[in-house]
Image (cartoon, rainbow, N blue to C red; front, side, top):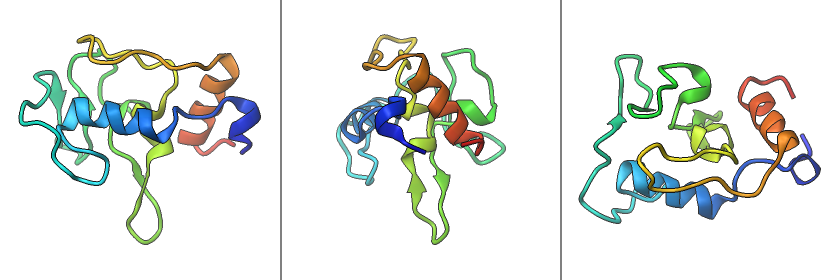
Length: 114
């Protein structure tokens, strides 16, 4: 998929910042603060992480954690945190530049339609 023309996911530094707001760590596991998000629903019964404040529920497109690649590494472009138009319902972060094509490209990537 051509993320450049399609708008693509949020940049990795934005994903990292969003991750730090939800998890209190960088995407590499380094601690950044000790106050976890009060709205998080981390490690739900299905083993995935979700925001407990956004109202998206526990669906594939709502997963905060990345889908695992072969070999165990996570693909952060498949995380909800990579969604360009994502706005934290608790006001911790907002959307980044993107448009309808960026949103469509992200959904196709997560659902393996691209």
